[in-house]
Amino acid sequence: MAERPIVVVPVGADDEALDACLAALDASTPAGTRVWLADDGQAGPRGFAIIERWMARTPLQADYTRRQRSIGEVAHLDEVLAACGDADVAVLACDSVPLPGWLVRLSACLAADGAIATATPWSNAGEAVAWPRIGEINAPPEDVERLARAAARMPLSYPELPAAVAHAVLLRGSARLRAKGLDAASYGSWYAALIDLSLRLSGLGWRNALCESAFVVRRGEGSAFEGDGERLAVRWPDWHARVAGFLMRDPLGAARDRLSELLATTGPPEPQAELFPDEPEPGPRNGTDRPGGAAP
Image 1: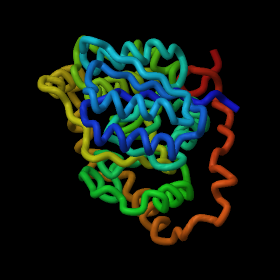
Image 2: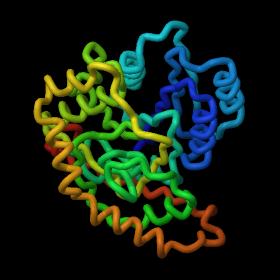
Image 3: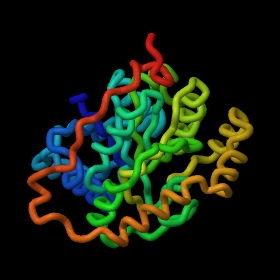
Image 4: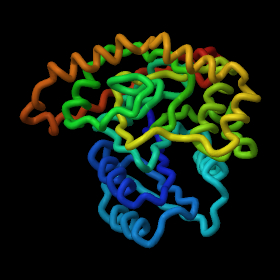
């Protein structure tokens, strides 16, 4: 079995959201998964207490680092990703709530197609991957356990996205290294830096894909810092038109409808389902770490 990805959570200042995120990580992620809480000097005393309490009891293999002086979220995250080397890394927003099976299914997405560089799950506030309505901040789902079981039944084709979305994304380490990581000199927000990284990966022949079987809840959408949108438009003049075209064509409409249908027909869990965790063996990658799975 391939090694599980590292989960990186950039710590924010919202203590309540951080507490909910960490609790969901424990409930939805296989025990022993490596988790790195990366704090760019954002957590206050209450946030630090939440992290300290969580670190003492989590079944995950967790580490916490904190910078005494902030260097900015993109520079800090690029530093963290660089420290992970060529490992696959799932970056999870600290105001997100991952549903059961999220990491296993994202990992299976990368394993299924060697050309996929980024795998993004559904979200209620996921812009291009928003469910049940595209491009909207939908209300958080009421029954997340049932939604996770419904998503697990989704047919998988891993469709192309304009770019990965910042609520949660699994990055293939080898692809990220070839793209030279994040551009911390140009962008202040992870939101914009991820779009830029996705477009550079696409230009190198990689794919940014939706993982139809994974779902991560978020309170709201990510946002760009002042000036980030203009810099994206200068570097990628067709970006806004591409996103607008995607939202208008809605190529994920049938998949969203299918998820809604499966949710409506998904019953209660099997009586002893917890004894048989949903953790399939990832399939072989198509080739090595070249775009499209080509051999070196």
